[in-house]
Length: 152
Image 1: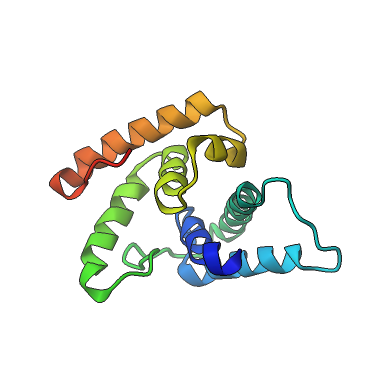
Image 2: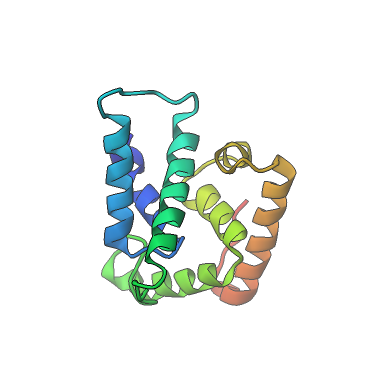
């Protein structure tokens, strides 16, 4: 699970305002907790991982609110050097979205979750998740113009 989803979970944590190192720490701590003294297997492991990453990221962000100066040019995503500018433009556009919409887009596009899985992971009604996704895509198309290709 870590090999398959670790990088996406760290990027997801970055979407809540964490720097990449802190995001990786959140993910590592989450997996260590799952492998701890009393290992457990959640009913829906992927939904659990994203919900736990979200909660830990928000908690850490809240705890560090007065301490951390977040840099707008630190990439969330691992990309080739030729894609750096596009990655930063995308990050800026994502930051302009309301947090709920940003989270939904991230989970759908980068994590490959279905809208139903997102609803379960965020404990949000399916229709609300679908609306957030649709509104977010409209805003991203507006912001990014021709660089944004329609994803369904």
